[in-house]
Each structure stands twice: as structure tokens, then as C-alpha cells.
Length: 398
Image (cartoon, rainbow, N blue to C red; front, top):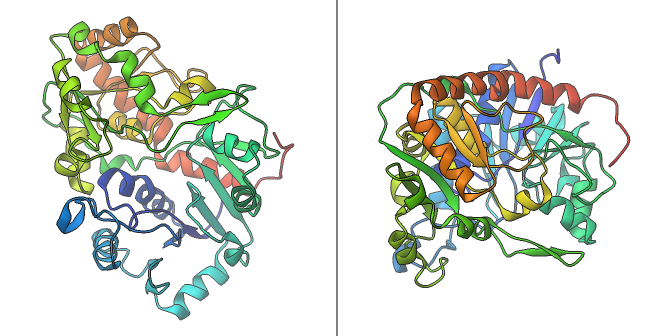
């Protein structure tokens, strides 16, 4: 058991002030604090902050100053009694807010471990006084392809760390070698923050980006985003009827979605809503998850092709809320139980069958979902395992 540590957690809460993203990073902070560690949140990504509503023009997502983003982060931290445990460097002005300069420097100088989640530290060398820097890859396959393709700036960031983790818990020869030993980990879920058994709508839902970034090509093979996989299941609503399917897809009221796609999705029977409307903040996101009957979701095409064993942080929250998940297979069956609570699919018919099975025996699948969350995603266990691996002897790189 790792004793009391001072730990710095990084993230994108201010840069990306949306409920689901906030939970992704916040649960590390809350979970480590539950274990008794002296935990701080430091956001120093260099990523330009933006407004979710597009600003006064509706399409001005890049903000002119950091004030609203700072206010959002400060509000989140204050809510969880972390007022004196956060710092944010605004990339526009370069100024720090939150902790005073003296306290921030002392925290970094005396920290035992930095968790760089999703490569959210722009200059990890500035944190080299911390004896253990841990890189947490939340985007497996794509991370390894970036390294294998020779992106020197990204490799320099990754190589600056002492230990490397990946949400790709079952990396195989389908994923390029990078010269690192990728230790398996998964999203921690603070179970006490998610209530099972609350009233829900009779809908299978999910929250998704249509495409987070452009496809990448490695050795002649393309690795795409969710849009590629989703179109394989465009006819699912008619196959899964009478169950209702809803997607909170970013871009539904913005230019990111291809012209005509929204009307086509609705024509095919999908209910489409904008996450900025239905789950814009911590409470809205949690209410949306807890208020759904279950989740149905595709994965990024790169995860499907590379089969890294990735499992969604969002799906972990659905499970914690006692909401079964019907999700696309990315190779995680060796490490997570499937059949009850988690149902996997590869084909359109398997997706429809999974929805029917959940709807026909909901209580059993709901109980199984919460049980899986407690056994496999509980922050106490996930973070204890991560800390033990972070300070273990190094192994042979992959």
C-alpha cells in the first residue's frame, strides 16, 4: 500500500468547460483525496480556452480572455472544497491564477508524483523537480501511431516521463511499438458521486463527439473517428424498436457536422440533442447519465481496428449509475466481464440484440452494471493500482 503522497493531477477542465470532461479529470482528484493523498489540480496545457456557446456570434469558440474559463474551474474546485488546491496558467496572458506563485512553486517542489492525464502538460520538463512523472494515455492506438510516425515534439513530451500508462489495457501487435512499457489502467470512478436506482427515461443514450480530429494513416491503413463506425449502425433505430435511441452529439447545432447529416439521422429514427443543452456542466452530465435507461455507443474507428482494450470513461459512469451499457467491442473482453451489465457488439444485428436483451431483463442488467462499476472502476481500487505501478521497478519497453 502506497503511503501518504503529495500528487499533482493535470487536466483540461478550464480549457474545455463541459460536464463530461470535467468529471474525467475531477474523479482523479477526488479519488486520490479519498485515499488520503495530498492532491492538487494544476492545469498548464497551453491549450487555448474556448466558449461552448460560440460567444456572441455563435461561432466564436476561441475566447479573447480566460475569465469565464477561470470562473468555471474555480466554481468546480470550490464545490468540492478544493479552493486552495488548484492552479491554472492562462495561455493567452501566460499568467497563473488560483494558488499563489509561492505556494504553487512549493507544491511542485515538494510533490512526489505528477499524473499527466491525456498529455495535458505542455512543458513536462518544467516539472522535473517532481521525482516521478507519469504519462496517462487516454487515446490508445492514436497515441502510439503519433509516436511511431516520428512526431518528435510529441515523443519528447512522452519520453520526459518516468512511467507510462494507457487506457489500452490489452495492447497487441495491432498497435505500433513505441519503445515504452505501457502499463494498463482505466478511468477511476468515484462511486459515491453516482446514484443507482434513480428514475429514468426509457431511452438508450450516449454523449459523443462526431469526430474529435481528422483520421490518421499509418502504413497505408486509415484510423478514423466515431463518425466512421456510427454510419455502420445508421439503421439501428428501426432494428431496435420499440427501444428509443438518443445521442447527445457535439456539433448538432454547429458547423462541425456535415451538411444534411442532422436531418438524415433524425430521418433514420435517431433522437439527436446537443450536449451543450442537455449536459453542459457537472450536474447536467450526471443527471443525463443517471436519467437514461442505458447506454448504447460506438467507439472510435481506431479503437475498433487496433483493438487496444479501451473502455470509455463515460461508460464507466453509466455503470456506476446502474445503467447497463451496450458498447462496441474494442478488445476489452479479457479484462472486463461481458454478458450482464456490459453487452458488446460488432455487427448491426448484435447491437440490436444487445438492446433487446437489456430491455427485456432490465433489473438484472442494471444490478450487474453497478456491481461491475464497484468491482472494476471504483476509484479506490483503480488509483491504488495506478500508484503501486507508478512506483514499481521499470519493465521491458514495448
